[in-house]
Image (cartoon, rainbow, N blue to C red; front, side, top):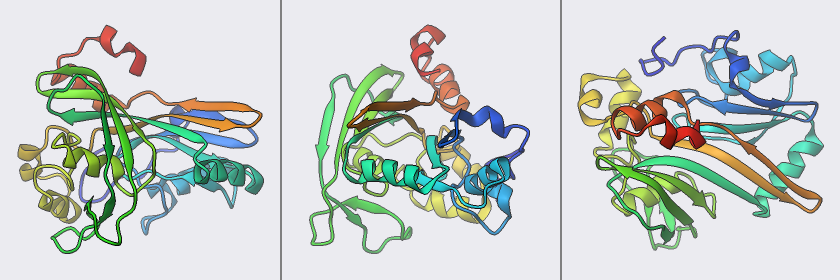
Length: 260
């Protein structure tokens, strides 16, 4: 299976149970791989996470609490009842949830970085979905904290906590810091790599420019601070990010044990 070809592969339903973090009568929590879209596509139910979850549960309607970009791996929450979906979605809207990501960034740094810079959709440029730090009237407040965990061989493994939830926020702020998310096709070394990938999949040009086949960004933990008490979920890093940490950064298993 080549997840990064011209067409993303269909999900194998026999493998899907391995992605489940937790399932009960109210929720289905998934550790999504970094090659799968959330929403249904033209290629049928097994081409998206929503479609696969419907096949797995047999439910006609499920409620996606919050989505991730195709190339961001990690926690996805599905609610099985409207009342449960409303509870978790309102928690996000009211900012009584803490979200933690694990990212691999270019460059080495050892002290936390707080970024409070507004973001807006960029005007012009070859990639129309790209956003940027901007101070025009369309910009929205965006706040992100970067906490370095381990720096080695020109890269930093870090915990990232977005205080707000703007589109591409972590990636935009990382680019603004000149500490880009490794493997980012839009906010990385050349945004036209994204166009190449959309048109042709993983090519020799992308292979030469990017050290990993997708952006090294993983949604690792949610903590919902409900009045009756906190509810937390966590998901270990995916194998491709772990392989980069070991092979390129030279990290040992004992250094990575808390992320596995």
